[in-house]
Length: 53
Image (tube, rainbow, N blue to C red):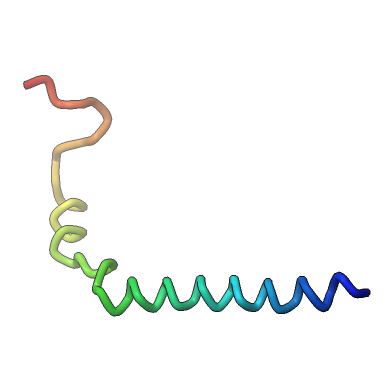
């Protein structure tokens, strides 16, 4: 049972760090790309093969 006194705070700390990291990415607008998504879905170019330039 002594192990739980270490594991619970460590897990809460790691979960809090993950939440802070996620909120940081939300505030820095890393998930906003509505124009790119709209254009990619209508594009006829497929990513199956690399370009041979």
